[in-house]
Length: 346
Length: 258
Picture 1: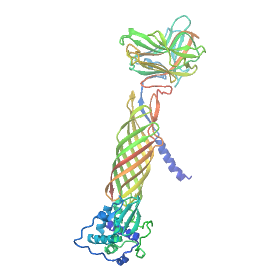
Picture 2: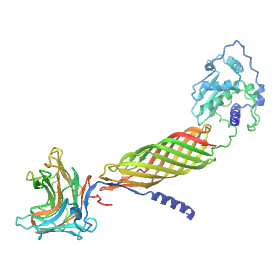
Picture 3: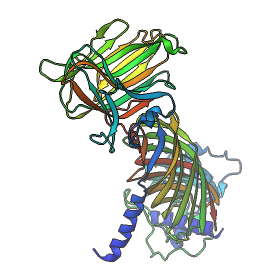
Picture 4: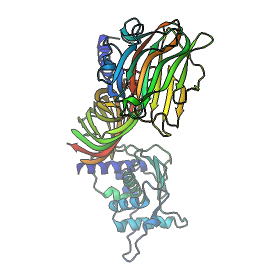
C-alpha cells in the first residue's frame, strides 16, 4: 500500500513536471462549469483518441475517471471541447511512438519515454497529464502524500511547452528491493552442437538465486530425459545431468526484473551404444562456462519467468568405439531455453 | 601477472581440462587375433579355427617377433613352393560362429617381392553346400597375390565356382613390399540376389561383387593364409597380424584394442 502511494506521488510529480505546473499555482485556472444533471454522458472515444496501442485510449480513460470525479471530468472536457469546436479531433490524443509516447490534451503536448513499454504505467502517466491539462485545480485539491522531491517554483505555463523536450524525471526511485531468495522451476529445452554431434534434449530445471542486492549467488540443476543421437556413425543413448553455480546480476524495472548469470557448469554425461555388437555404458564429466539471461515479474511472489542460457564446454569428452577408435566428441556448445514459475521468498 | 591472478586461472583451466574424458561405448568387433599372447590360441581356442602348415616341413607356421604391425608379435607363415606343381600350405582358419554378414580384416607384410608362377593365395573364403556336413566343404573365393611385369605385386580375385578370375574394379592395384598392408572384405554369403563380396586394399575399394548369389549356404570359412605353387624365390615368409571379424568396417585406422 505504501508503495502504491509512493508510486502515485511519483506519477503525479512526473506529470506535473511535464506540464510545468506546481500545485500551488493551479488555483489560478478557472473553475469548471458544473454539469447539467440531464446532460448526456460523454463517449470516451470521442474525447480520447489517437493511434496508440500502448497505452490504449480506453485505458487512459479508465485511469482518468479514477483521478477526476466523473461529472467534473465531463464538465471540463465539455468546456475544453467548446473551445475546440471547429476541430474534429478528440480533446485528448495519444500517440505511441515506440519507446516514446506523446500526449496532446487541451492544446498541450508532452512526450515521455518508457523503454519497458509498460502500457498500464503509460496509461496512468497519460491520465495524470490529461487531468492536469484539463483540470489542474481538481488534481491539486486531491490530497497527495508529501515525499515528492522539492521542486523549485515554476511559472504557470499557459502555452504548450516544447514538444520534444526530454522527459521529466519521476520522483526519486526507491532503492531496488530484491527478495532474499528466489526459486525458479520450469520446463527446459537444450540443443547441443559440435563438429561431431547435434542433439536436442528436454527436461526440467530448478534454479535457486539468493541475496537482497543487485548481485547474488545462483545454483541450477537440470534433469534431462535421455535422447538418442549419433556420433561419428555410432548410435548412442545419452543421459545428461548438468549442474551449475555462478553469480546473478539483477535489474529491477517497474514490472519486470531482468537478470543475467555467469558461472561454471559441470555435467555428468552418460552414453550407451545402441547398435554395437558389444555395447557399453560410460559416464564422463563435462566442465564448462555458462551464461544466462532471464526475466520474471518483479513483485509477485509467484510469477512466470523465461530464461535463455548458453554453455561452452571447451574440452568435450570423446566417444570411443572399436574398431573405429575415437568417433567424435560430444557437443561443444549447449543452448537452452527455460520457462516456468518463479517463487520469491521475502 | 601476479601469483594471485595466476592461481585462480590455473584452477579454472585445471577444472576445464578435468572435463576431458573418454566415453568408451563398446565394440563392433566380433573376434580378433593380435598374436600378443605369443601363440595361436586366438585362432584355435574355441575349437572353431585352426593354425597349421602342411606338409610340414618344409612349410612352417609360427608366432614371431621379427615383424609386427602393432604390439610385438605376428604370425609368420613360411612355405617352400618350387616349380614342381605342388601346392604348399600354411594357414590360419576360422570356421564357425561367423555372422550372416561381416567385415574380415587382416594386415600382411611381404619382406620382399616374389615372382608368382602359378598362384599364391593369401585371403580365402570357403563354402559348404550343406552347412552341417563338413564333407561338402569347397573352395570359393581366393584373393591372390600376383606379379606384374614391372616386378611389383598386385591382387587377383579367383572364383572357384566359375573357375575364373573376377575382374577388379581397380585394375592391378599395387601391393606394397616391405610395408604392412591391410586387406579387408565384406562378405554376405547368400544363395539369392542379396549376396555381396567387397574388398579393400589399404582402405581403397578394389572390387565389389553385389546383387548375386555368393554361396549356396550361409556357412563361411575365412582363411588368412599363404598357399602357393611355383614361387620365386621358392621359400617365402608372409607375416600376418591384427586379424579381425567385425560388424563394421575396420579400415586402415581401425583399432582392435583400447
